[in-house]
Figure (cartoon, one colour):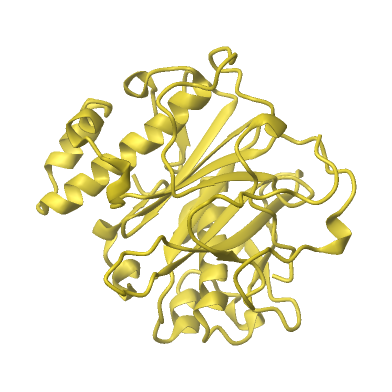
Amino acid sequence: MTTGRPTYDDTAIGRRTYDGTAPGHPVHDDTATGTRPTEPCVEGWLVDLRAAEHAWDDEVRRGELSAEEVRRAERFRSPAAAVTYVRARSTVRRVLARRLGEHPATVRIAAAPGGRPALPDHPLWHVSWSRSAEVLLVAVRRGAPVGVDVEVMRPVPSPAKVLRTVYPHTPVLADLGEPEAFFSAWTLLEAAVKATGRGLARGGRDVRLYRPPGARRCALAGIRDAGTAPWCGRTDQFELPSAGRGAPSPWVMTAVVTRGRTAPDVRLNTWRLPETEPPPDTAPGAGVPCAERAPTVPYEPNTTGPQGHFTDPARNDKNGRR
């Protein structure tokens, strides 16, 4: 159980903001202080798949994939796209191996009805991942479904029109002209339909988003016809580590949706890779108590991409679209 204000990682590379005003220390909701619920937390990893400091060994990475994943990698026409795919899938496997006490190559990943990933050998564990360009977000949770989305933020022509193609309630969200407003809505929508396993085409209209007065981001109000247990969501905004040569660093928007009455307790590891070995003193499949894991990125209260993303699946790896 965690009490008081959530903690966060001061050592993580890159800046993050939560209220859209300024980078630095996050802004918290004063009503969120005090004892927090003892619900299992979500562990996430946000990874730059092109970061040179990771010293990628792509042959080793390929050896961690399943036979079907290797065949899929070989079907890419672009060698660079194949490398990104291999790195993304091996990272997903390393995250799972770390949680489950297995080798990355032995983790079985199946597709549940609707396309949501499932772990046949560990039915109590749930996983979701999303890739936008070369940025990957992976999250795992024990005991409850989870859905995530990540998007590289960029100007989007006619954002309300784009969102309305999958979300008929777009008018209630007011002006979506700012990328922060649009991508908070889009990532929450994607994360929600992946958590339920319905997909955008079938489940988009069941998601309920809202825009608090004066807020720069949208928030999750609930998911219709998705069981009696409530759903909760959060969004976070991160600046990628500098690419050098004076180039501006892009920002990404992330969203996490899972079961719970309050904001999901997400422990997000930013711009680093998971260790290949499970944490010490951890029995296979047992996981680690939430309070003992990596630093937490605080929840943003409910005051709260390239354009080709919406039509070019080769640039994205969404776990609801297998």
